[in-house]
Length: 282
Image (cartoon, rainbow, N blue to C red):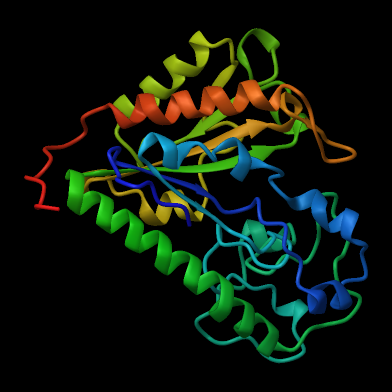
């Protein structure tokens, strides 16, 4: 978590999938080498968003990798076939994400390679949820609530990257989408926020699409509550803009993208989506 010296923008920027600290015990459990596990990362999205605190916004980014545990899922979205013990009754065991192998604890990496050769004890899921998933969401909830209390509303930008292949056919006039803005089909944030984001990015030359192929995940659905002053917008950035996708190397264009995402944060931070309460004396 990185806070500004003084928060002056009603914005929390989150990067849940850019973590790249791989626990040794996880690497020992996996049958895949590190370079294959890293294919699930939203590589360097935390770096692209790193100017947010200097602008007066808050940045929260996970350190643990998505392949270890995915905080953009329900807490107990578990594939029962992965575990040597029965999953608890409160777990979600049937969803499109689980079928794809991408529940809270992923079964596969992005190219559908199996991560584990054998089933894991359920205690491993419990440990990852209690030590990584729960603290991340406690921190995010606290930051959202503090921001809403201070400004009267909160803008939550949930930032991700997408494989360039996922964006093909989804841009305007046949051009691949550079950035996809997801507002859960109009339910997770004020439409003025999406319009301003789309306009800002389009003026900078990006091909922007709404909700296709990504409308927003668990974070957007769970936190987005426009009527209660929380506006969650998912931002998916094509990796082709800044990354050698095969070798996971930064491209020189990452600097321009970082500058433009900083501009997006500043622009959205200036929109008035509520009536701010009087500031408490500091």
